Image 1 (cartoon, one colour):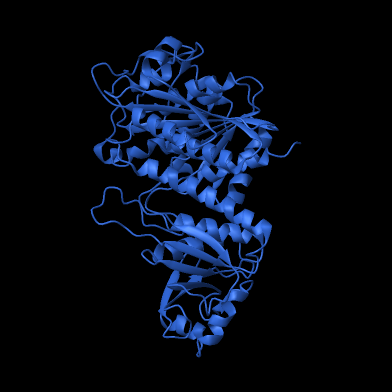
Image 2 (tube, one colour):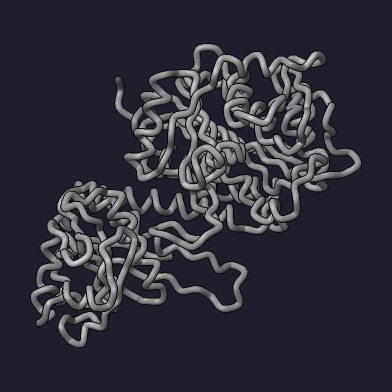
Length: 499
């Protein structure tokens, strides 16, 4: 695992395998980024025009791009890495995350990497540490030849001895570890990660934490009337689980509840997916993974916020006893739902989780799910959709996400969706949209039916950004991304100060 520390020393003389500095500009106007005094000596020591050398080798200042140059003795480190920071002199924290993440990813196998990017504020320090640790992530559990990430990241900053900078770095280490834990869970293949093993993993993790973990097995779910989770999991030889996590600080100033969709593999059930669409369906538990990791991180950070979290775990498989289109399920709490498409299973398990969360009377409920392909159609594969029953919360969550470095966009729940939910004549609610359009909106409206009266609620549809099937970029690897973890932590932080 990559470690991170702060040091106040020159990038020119620091003992490291590689030094990372930042450049801004466009085309011929490449210049060293300001706000990084530790990097100044590198440019001066180069002897020639470093910007000209970068132009000659085709380097750019595009955020997330890096260029490696042998130092040839100009600096103590044998390798110089130049990271692009964009065109704007005012470098944002997210630009720093991307640059440090891309550099750490490009330097896999190096023992020590010194990063001399702009770090004059606590926010910048946190962004560089966070980005470098997320960028250094590698998943090699099943590889015969292991991938060696950067062993140590040293962030060069004049703030190295500042108490607040040290605290910012410690928070960044905690947050990045939570994101990487989520990635590990998502990347684990479904033959090894299924409801029971997922629940066991979280329970074991809980033993190292102040978070209390309890697991409700299939027999208990049946006795208590969890028709949604059981209905989805009926077709699998691996029965479902409901995992409850509870963090209770001594003097909480608020109480938040998180609910995560945890479909460990989604075949679509009897409404079976095309085979090509199943390839990445191990990621359909990303919401539950994010909820678990965020809960542990909130506890580790010691935030004065009570957290009640619920992981709704099932495997959606076709079998002779699987739920059929046309079946009616009685959800936890008593509402009945006519199932019209077994590939719209996430809303069924989440509904049971939401009703469970209502009972602890939180100040706020946030659910997280890889819920609909329709949300990907609307927002692409890097932006999550946010839905809510509260106008202020609908605007607040995307802002909190942005401050944490995640892209989310507010989405509506139109009034006509309430009528579409009631097109069935044999149950309280229809499970699936009666037409082709607005699938993400319909799903959000369905979930809203299970939120307790007067409880502010937000639904995060992370179907797009939860799994990256394309090339790595910035601090984002191929595979599980850890989407929503940082936003959930930011939500808890926003509630950690009495209003």
